[in-house]
Length: 160
Image (cartoon, rainbow, N blue to C red; front, side):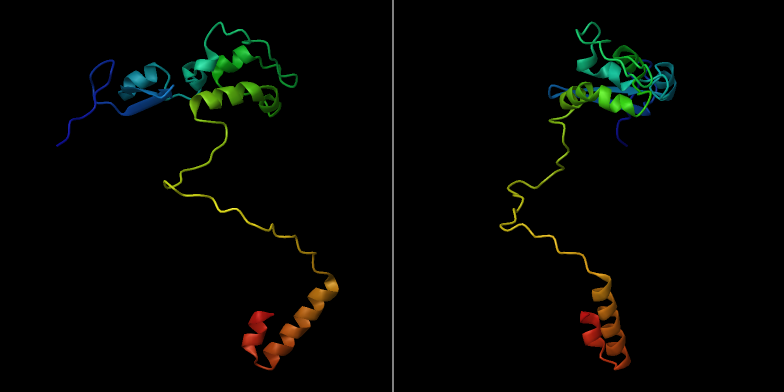
């Protein structure tokens, strides 16, 4: 049987595993259920991912400068609880979020995984949007379809 992972705090078997990657360095913390609860990791109210992010270090020059006019949430309060107060906060704190996400990931846009050497094909001629069918066109097609089915011309009906 494989070696079990133990809690970094008390050496009991670990059931909660945290992984943080900062500047291409991986930091792992393994905790038992009791220690995870004591540190607030398993309780969303007591755990703020913002505390683990480099862009939210205490004393940063812009901390507390931004305030959401809709709900009054400050950047400092967001750092403390890791949650927004309303939908407007996403617009107010957009730059903060962009910086935070760029620090956590290799960019702000998800591009997914692609096999080595894979290139995304680019269409030579963009497809022109087709005009919407008018009610007359739709009625004519429905009539033609009905006639084809009644005449048992199912292949023609399938093309319509």
